[in-house]
Length: 115
Image 1 (cartoon, rainbow, N blue to C red):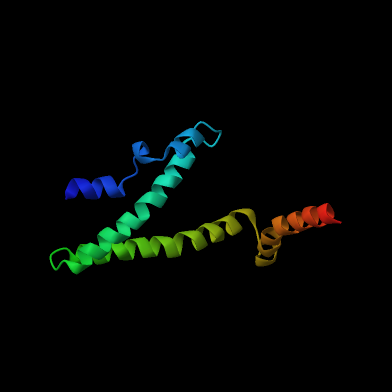
Image 2: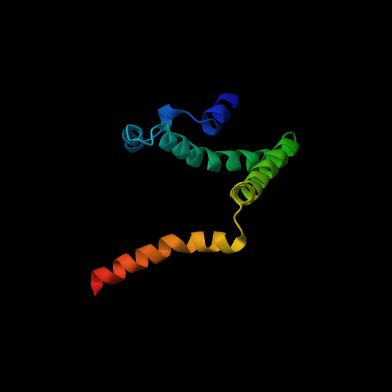
């Protein structure tokens, strides 16, 4: 049981698909493998947490695991944006303009293609 939890929740490059193994040869390298392993591991960790919650002996550990994942998913993205804004002096207005910039370029490109 413990070895299954370790196998299901720790990143292991041997478990990535052949497509991802091929993509690791690209300039992005192991970043693709790491991301694919995180995507594989997250549902396994949630399932483990829910299984632990249903077991009276491991319930506390399951709730801690689930709370940790929820906190990480809820806190890190806004914290990263806020840190970026503080480090580079961005305001909300500049951040909104940055979010709209790629869409404006793509719209111009595709609009001119069909005209």
